[in-house]
Image (cartoon, helix red, strand yellow):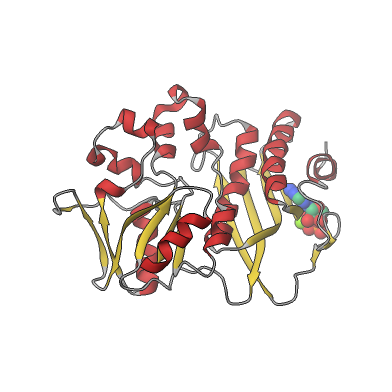
Length: 309
Ligand code: ADP
Ligand code: MG
């Protein structure tokens, strides 16, 4: 199959059908119609085999995850997802792999109403770059630079499951493995937090690395409590003590949201979300992150999250 058969066969018409796509796949570029009064929110993430997913990952899971990591970034901005582009580098045009990849990609795109509107296809080592676009009412994006001293620091869901699944490999049970292969981007939570959170980030690189970005951008620090870091039953059964879980809860690839909220907004935020929201600490004036155990003693932080260079 040539490049054009590949695009027509697997990617044309993938995802939701949307009225705001004036021209999708097939021309030199797509033409989109953003609604008046809204700002575009755009993000791009690359997945490389062996670096961002184990080489034996099923094609459908790669399809899902390649969009999920981008949707998680849109969620962390409080954006409504709308469109995406796919730049695919493939060693060969393998029909089974492409069908699986497109199936996983399509499932998540349909779930969140995104249309695939273009991309690029080249031969090379397996590498996938997706650019996702969404929008917010002008001025309402959730940013990293708004955290205030006295804000409460919260995270959604549980932390550390992706790292545990990676460590267990084929021994991980299906629901745990799904935390690694099929992360659920918290799009609805991001929308619900618009107008409530002062700052937000998605946890891709790890809690301390990512919260560190909020603190640096906002010119503040944070005090965190080890015993509050939320862990699943699966992680607790493998690592019963909070200290033994620390390398996992801070490892990244969980795609939970970390948000800062004025104390008065925490109950409203928790009620508005369809997933657990756990208070893990407070924003402080003193720069840097500090983690305390149950006795209030300072713990040293595990080395920073995932860094490429
Ligand atoms: P051009 O040579 O003008 O850049 P291409 O041959 O790269 O055009 O692409 C033809 C059309 O197919 C364009 O609309 C492009 O956006 C789309 N396209 C190419 N690769 C992909 C892909 N992997 N997924 C989705 N659309 C793609
Ligand atoms: Mg092209």
